[in-house]
Amino acid sequence: MRAILLSLILLPVCAAAAAQTPPETQAPSPPPAAPSNASPPTLDTVLVAGEQPGPGLWKVTRRDSDHVLWILGTQAPLPKTLSWRSDEVEKIIAQSQEVLTDAQADVKIGFFRTMFLLPAALSAKKNADGATLKQVLPPDLYARWLPLKERYLGKDDGVERLRPILAANELYSKAIGKSGMTNKNALWPVIEKIAKQHRVSIREIEVEIPVDNARQAIDDFKSTAGQLDIDCLATTIQRLETDLGAMRARANAWAIGDLEKLKSLPYPDQRSVCLNALAANANLREKLADARKRLQTEWIEAAEAALWDNPSTFAVLPISELVNADGRLATMRKKGYVVEEPQ
Picture 1: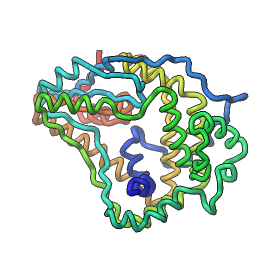
Picture 2 (picture 1 turned 180 degrees about the horizontal axis):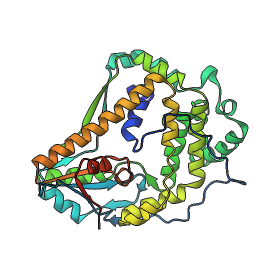
Picture 3 (picture 1 turned 60 degrees about the vertical axis):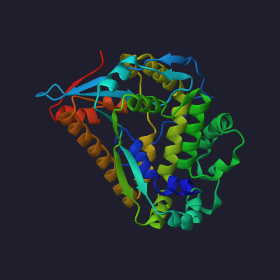
Picture 4 (picture 1 turned 60 degrees about the horizontal axis):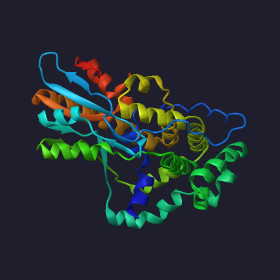
C-alpha cells in the first residue's frame, strides 16, 4: 500500500530521476493526429536472443592525468530474451577501483503518515467525480485508445477510471512487455556481481528527496488534471501506434553494439509531454527542476572525484544521454575532460 501512495505523490520526483532530457516548460504543441486508418502496430523486427555483448564503452580522461572513467551506455527497453555478457566490461571492472551507479532519487516519507494518507492518494489516481476516460477524452482520441487497451490491457476496466497520465503509464508498460521487451534493468545485476567477485567498491549515488507535506503533494498532483494530462496519453498512444518497431530496432542495435544504428534511429519520447503535465503545478514544477539538477550534479561530482582518486572507474548512464548534446557527458566535455566514443 505504501508503494501505491508513493507512486502518486512522488511521481514527479521519480520521473526526474528517470528523465534523460529536460522537459519543455511551456505547454507542448498538440499531439499529432492518428494516422489515417490507424490500426494496432505490426512488429516486423525480430528481437535478438541469447548472449549479446552490447555496445563498447565511452572513455573519459583528465587532460593532466592517465586516470580513466569508463562508461557503459544502457538502453531501455531491451529484449526479454537477451542475456548480456561483455568480456570487455568484466575485464575493466576487474581492473577498476570503483563502480558508479546512475543517480537515483531516495524519497523520504514516514510510514505512518503514508498509511494515514492512503485514501487521499487512492482518490488522486482517479478522474474527478468518478468520470471515465470515455467521458474525459475527446471522442477521436478515445477511439484510438480502445484498440490499444484491448490489445495490451485486455479486460482491465479499472484503467478506464484512471487519470489519463496514469492510464498512459499502464498502457505503455504493458505494451512493452507484450512486444517482447522489458524496461527492467537486466544489466545492473551482472555488473554488481562482477564488482563483488573482484571486490571492487560500488558507489551508489543517491539524492535524498524529503517530502515534508505529503497531503500537499497529493493535492498538487490532483491539480494537474486537465488538457496536459490528456496530452500525455495522446502522445503515448501516438508513440505506440508508430514507434514500437523502432523501439525493437533500437533494442537490437544496443544488444549487438551497433552505435551508428542507435544514433540514426529516431527517438520520440512521450515523457517530456507527461512531465509537462506535472509541471503545470508550480510546486511540482519546482520539485521536478530541483530533483533533476541535484541528480545531475551529484553524478558529475562523483565522476569528477573518481577521476581524481582512481586510476580506473567504471560507470553506467543511459545511452541516449551519452549522445545528447545536453547530457551529463556533454557537461563533462564542456568542463575540459576528454571524451572518446566507442570504436
